[in-house]
Image (cartoon, rainbow, N blue to C red; front, side):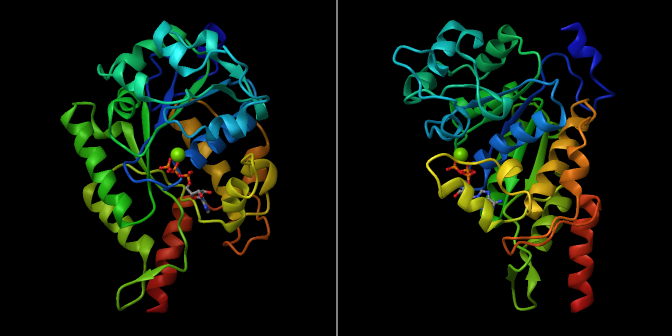
Length: 315
Ligand SMILES: Nc1ncnc2c1ncn2[C@@H]1O[C@H](COP(=O)(O)OP(=O)(O)OP(=O)(O)O)[C@@H](O)[C@H]1O
Ligand SMILES: [Mg+2]
């Protein structure tokens, strides 16, 4: 653990233990699993020395399909066993892209029954003592397993893609305040952003309204904004096995943005990005999928501000 601690830079999350990230939204289809899985790949690419453990708290098996090197053998351990043993060590596997994962359970009914105490997962992770980053992908609910993820996490990433997911974010922030966890441990992440989506009579971009509301509420946000990308959509749904953005969608804006997000998150939890991939990810890649081309090494804040300025100028 000594070396692991030594790798840390000045963190804004105090790393009392393994940094834990949870992706959560009560709204389905906002990109939770896409962000969780690809973030794991980008974090590994930026910091080869930093093991990343992915744990899915739903029964959709997307993580297994994308990351597992082989099908789960009969009798082999998965999340349900790790949960029962109060330690995930025995069931962790090394998967594709150098990402570790815990195989998903066939169903979550039994797990949920054993998750009534929202601090259960936090204790399990403490005993697991993973020497790297843990990423928890959750189901689109605010039920027992998701509550466990929220309690275990140093950072809760809340994807917002539209007004419906913004309303669900409101519930998550209320829940954090009520549970006295504090809203500062959460970050809104704008996902599935399409610059062409306009709303209202004046044709304001959807993102403009969402940003304004998030600022009014003073919810913490990541600077990086993730675009909708038809190419990435096809990576997830076009093949039996979802493919990584880093390896299969390098020509997209989303690739650059995922690199920026991973760097932003690394700094936030106390690590500096090391690999040259940071530069590669921010490079002004040509867009092959119709999504907006990557901004030439602008900060994401500038990207968002530029979008707003452009909109104001056009009016
Ligand atoms: N940036 C993106 N651009 C285009 N499509 C995307 C993007 N991110 C995710 N998708 C697509 O949106 C759909 C939902 O994504 P994903 O499964 O990651 O969401 P989720 O929040 O995990 O959903 P669920 O609530 O069902 O778990 C998928 O079809 C996925 O391929
Ligand atoms: Mg999902």
